Length: 578
Image (cartoon, rainbow, N blue to C red; front, side, top):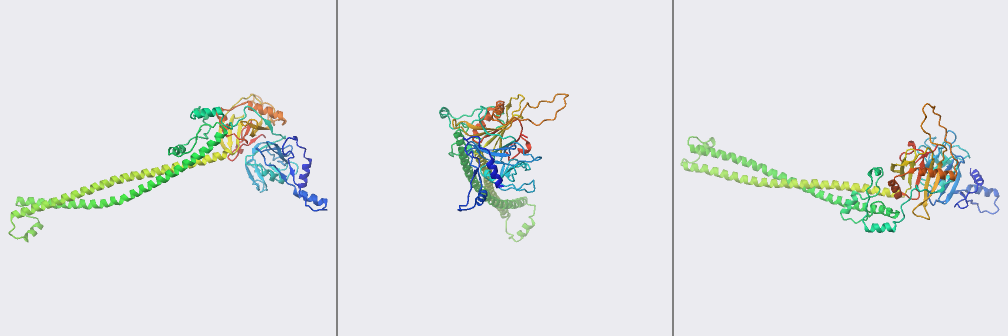
């Protein structure tokens, strides 16, 4: 295999441009054993065993372009072609699809779950339905089940420099990325705030303009002061997040991310302190409520005997008063108990003494009852005070527990906001991908495979097909740091008008396979320009993209829609042109 690979390198045509860095494409390092008088055959054998393919580390976004007709893959960055290799794509009946893809997953070793666990070293997945780049047998013709096989050395080399999201364009004809510019292509925020704008901003407070909410209904708010941040600020925490509206420069946008993170960290610290303080108050309130319960129980134990004693004294008083009444009437004999007691008294007791005894008994019972009632009143007053205190303590307990619940909710909310802010900060370092469908008149944004927004656009239709084109922001423009150097790769250049409605009474013709234009720079430039000329994007969407635009920004414009079975979660955009 290595010998065949070496022969293919010798047959490779010279690079087209001497100005392209790394134009030699494949570096061959031959390590020969330094043994004098060794035979030529031994040296050749050593050389064949020592061949390795080196792909230079890209200095800008990497583009992988695959030509099925040429059975070739080439890697490009802003400096030009870095490397290339022969491939083996899908044979008849298992054709490799053409279109726009990105690397979704990478594994140094993978086994096919479709074709009997076939080994797929250095696998780089292009679709979740089973298309991938991987090392395999490359016989010089189409032989795979749809995957793009690479020679082992090249597969390992290119695996080391690609990343998740690296753009891969598969076409029939061979195509090159060409420099491109157009007024419709997105621009980044200025590197710095213009001096005049900064002067105005320093004299007036930052204001966020009110816009039509219907136009912004589909666009999420990326930056702003949240409730947690405002709550933390109200407590006196010092954290700067000036200019919370739309950033005016890349430096200001980066600073907003930093300020937002710092503000949320301060808010989190404040929320944690609030939760701790609320928990301590709740502990004290719960303890107070627990401490007052035994006092109420003890008070109840005092009241019940007092009430029973008063009831018994009242009964005795009633009996004494009844006895006094009978005595004063003179006809009623004393009760049985009284008669028995009288028999032991001396006969000399006078009626006056008897009357006095009865009156003394009534008086003593009245004094006893009044004393018991006074004590009962005092204990009932104490009990009422205890009940009032218990009600106050219970209210304090409920409030303290409510404060704990609120503090926990605020803490969790702040934690969630900080997690979201950290995720957004990480996403800012991932390339933004945009798909514009001329067919559905929609624009879609994804970053790091996460959907950001979807919004309507306006497309001027004139009956033509515009094809499928990929625009990549390779770097900031050397001459103007507030613009991008764009590279254009046309994935599909159709010929003819778009299919209109079927005329009544005419038999529907079978749809022919689309004829395509040759992949020349002029054809690509003209059709891509026409496609962009036909598009009008809402300004608020453009502003949102400007905030997120970085080198690596990829824009796909196509007559086609996204195939639902290939564009679910965990994908960027897959656009099939065949």
